[in-house]
Image 1 (cartoon, one colour):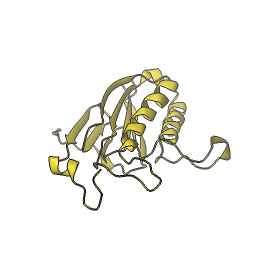
Image 2 (cartoon, one colour):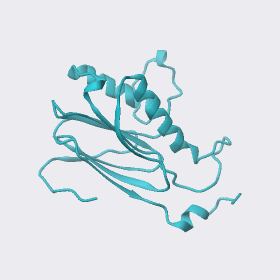
Image 3 (tube, rainbow, N blue to C red):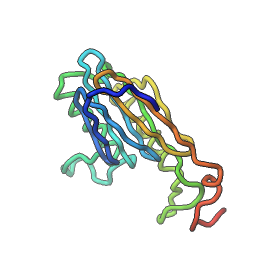
Length: 179
């Protein structure tokens, strides 16, 4: 991933993080998590989320703060910012990244396949974006390994570097029984 160095302020977006604004570079690292980027080419504003799971257990009617760790809440954060800026979903260039598989084999504590988290995150992003009227311009999703992502909100440019798992990591995970 190469990009031109500038004086543009850069922030690191942690898992569950959300940013919306202008004139920033936003950086994150994704495994099974998903990042959605939105950029308004006319106003040169945009944002990025980094969600970890498809949905929040809390029901919408129960109130409380939105939590960027969950896809449904992350998209609600975007919709709130679009409302504040007086813009509409169809005005944005939307790109989706992540949903990679980080481990081979194994089950989560509740019998849930840990490999499916990325797949569910991807499906949820596509569904929620479609429901809100967003059109996805580009995506880099799935596969083995993680991604480094850098989004320049001022220009709309995005740099992504996919780092695949080495063959040994795909077949041998210490402490996990092989099926």
